[in-house]
Image (cartoon, rainbow, N blue to C red; front, side, top):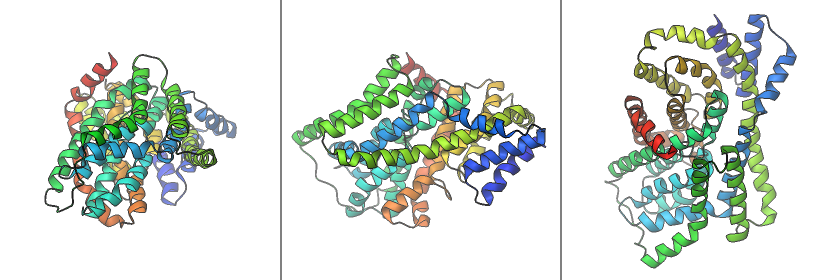
Length: 426
């Protein structure tokens, strides 16, 4: 009965168009009334406590860093570097998109920010060279979801805070899986684009490549600083967000000089708007998370999946299938905030490493950003490219399948995640 009330109170308001943040509060209130614990002060206290977390301070700083990078020229220089290195080979612009997406992922941690940058910078080039618009848009959307997987990742921060898991370990564990997804996209792009007739950009000389590399060096230093700093304990993930924001501001305003002081206000406002949405969701989710624990919803769900508890692989496959379905109807942030407190006790009871599960969970949620009908990243690419959603869905399908196959391999072979994670953690 508790699970029924939880799902009904959550899905009912969402079906009526109630914003997810308010649906989370309604869910908490419904569970409180069912348990006879209703008290408005408890609701208010949990909302305040939900956002009162030191690790969550990393979110606004990484959001700001992403905005600064797109406005201050860092993102453009990364794309220019990729163009100079691999733009001349067959299908080169697609490889440029994947290469640039990996580097941008290590700068911002946001799929939406990466999609906006890649769409604005690369899509016109791909269309001009003769690539199919839907296929090009599908590749850019699929490459953008690497953003929440390769550190720094806002998704890992939210999962780590809600689930009580080390964010540093999650960051280090996400590096290799993100690169594997990039490799899968490269193979898929080679297959789907081989019949296309398109113009190739000219091969750049060694001098031009070196000049482009030097020009982008300041942007490339940021992921190195973050990864090395986290690995050797120089700063925490929260402090890494501050480092990213301050460094990107310094490079954009002092080194590249593409972010004049007059634009700073607009950059801060844009970052604040996105941050407010995320943080309000986090605060509201604390109400339902507290009631989920009090009502023992995970215990009821554990009873339902008890036949799978002795088989970690089958349990993970069932959970991943559930998350894929949820991801088609819900954005990444609310999915993490709603499902983490429900699934974490089950994962621990089954003896599954929370860090390993976190990587699978965030990959799955990232893939959800390109699954219709919600597909936040799809909407961003549609807005940039003026493509119809139906056309873009067809273009994204081969890459979506490739990413799901990689996720399936991670479930079947946990060593693909755990072994590389141990390498980076040494």
